[in-house]
Length: 352
Image 1 (cartoon, one colour):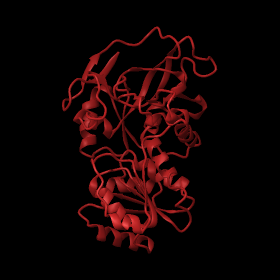
Image 2: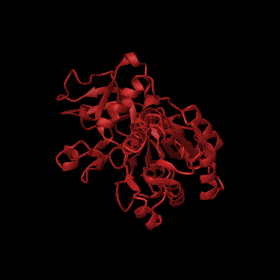
Image 3: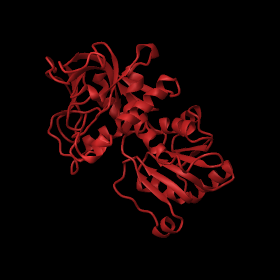
Image 4: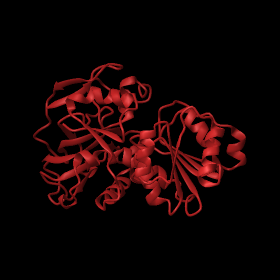
């Protein structure tokens, strides 16, 4: 099969033929990849961002946002769960199965687990072997959902869903929630903020007018361009838009030192902040306001199988807009370059 593989850090991917996994046994399932989302963490893998935390054996195939069709199943896969030809999405966090986090369903934060595309072979390929049918969610054909549209929901759409659920106790009528960054994740975060916030005012922040226009289309009440603006200028724009210069909750899908400092500067007393973005490497916020105003700060990483089931139910009901740019597998390096330059609107998807 054809795959775009990482052979070295800081080098372009190599498009090459690799051995296709066939003659499966046990719970294994072979999925024909219909779409694989292009995530900033793929760039960070190439750049060595995770090297000290997540050593991988090279070459490897990136890609953790996967949807497609069942191609082959092992002999222990129940017939009534998945069968050849079924449309499926892949839950790409594969835990050890026995630790406390796995037992409560949070396999994505299992200390002994693996993530597809971060060592195990991922979706930048024509096929991917999933170790168990238990990591698949079948999508009924009656929904007409296409793999290339729903693949990003397995991370970009999943991560932001989990993040916003963490602040549901803060938001509601008369409250406001800020989405910081309207890239691949933020375009979904705006939609979930509208769906889950029970009438809160939804604000979107970015440095691109095109991305902010997308945020409007996805349900943002107000959009604010942060480019070349100080925190006090941004607070003034928030005040002009809402009558208050602060917000009750903020979802940061950027994760730079600057975005975190800016976000905290406009957080209301007892406000909640969620970090999902991972561009920077550390957090710098003033201590006294954090303690004196009783802020709540959450790290939120990816999402679990049950979170993904929730997301897919929203998609089945037509409540999620899919903003994707499609690329062929041979265009993987070009797509990654566009992502690095901030030129992809919504989510880039490889369609093998």
